[in-house]
Length: 304
Figure 1 (spheres, rainbow, N blue to C red):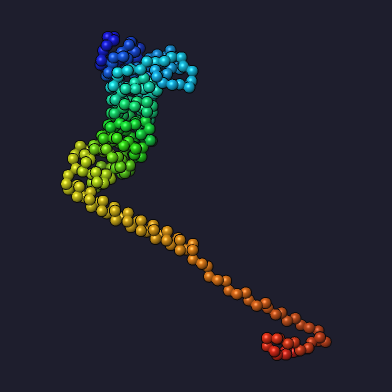
Figure 2 (tube, rainbow, N blue to C red; figure 1 turned 90 degrees about the horizontal axis):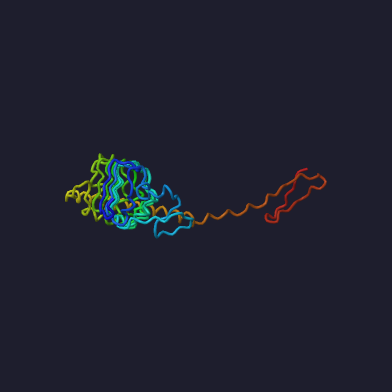
């Protein structure tokens, strides 16, 4: 290898055939490898074959290490698309300056370890095996472009905190109607939802645009600029939704008031206790005599 080479592309080669890449760590700015590997580790940290307990240069470790691996100090673009990679392993620690990462057309089922790439701006994870993306912001940081097309996503709950995201491609997934989570992304300008089951819903475009509220005019959906007619429809949908929210709030307040009144209404007073019953027992005839009831002042005689 030429040690000052700035860009390198490798196609259809095995890891055994790729030798000497580590010599390019100080100079390489763009690296593209296709149809050649099953792991990122074998390309980025070939020394891992000999040293299992390694750590990237400049990283702190609480465990004993057998080797310190120099970082790819100038690498800003890494394209490892069209391989057989099934996991984003910890080898990404040695590419801290990468801004453009392409891992499309692989076998990824989860997104891990990308939190080590502090300079990451553009990420392509299209055509993998992704079904969910939980708390994506903890792995993807402040990226601006994210391509997730051609996966198996059916909801977007994990994307709610990607506040710097500008361009999001979700085409060719399994999305039905649960997209409210991305309507609050403040910087999103380009959104692609084409070829999802939700696209057959009547007024699909206006219902999606309505999720962005006052920013609907700023969003380019499926490559098409929002029209004035769509904006008018969005305003109608917003008014309807606002009316529903007011009604629900009023109903909720009434329910709370009823609950409070029910809990504070005093219970009716108990009736006064009945006077004790006077039990008249038969007496022996020799003891029978007049009995006076003070409150009646009348003598009462019992028959023998």
